Image (cartoon, rainbow, N blue to C red; front, side, top):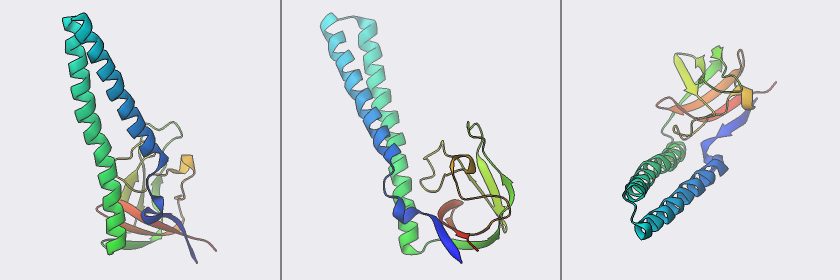
Length: 159
């Protein structure tokens, strides 16, 4: 019988996203405070730096942050609408990520190769590597629900 190890529908908005949002807002507050101080002192370098900081922080941070939320919403939509393939079989060519990171974990299931990392929220769905408690391992029988190489749900065979 299969047991659900991950499902995008049940994930909600991970705590990491709220930390990212908090960090982004703190950066904006810091930059705004630095800008206001630079306006008072009329130091050209400080004023230029604070404008560049705010522009970069708001634009790049906003793009990155909204991308993560968009991808997670897209994964939930794919699951809810049944827009996915199901591949079932034995995990082959499992290449684990070390605990410290520095490479992405991957495995092959049927004709598909899945690649993911704990250190990337950009895919929006499953990213839990074996070294951080993930359910995938060489030789395990699994059922993977996926779309565009993104894992939406994993069921692991429990004897």
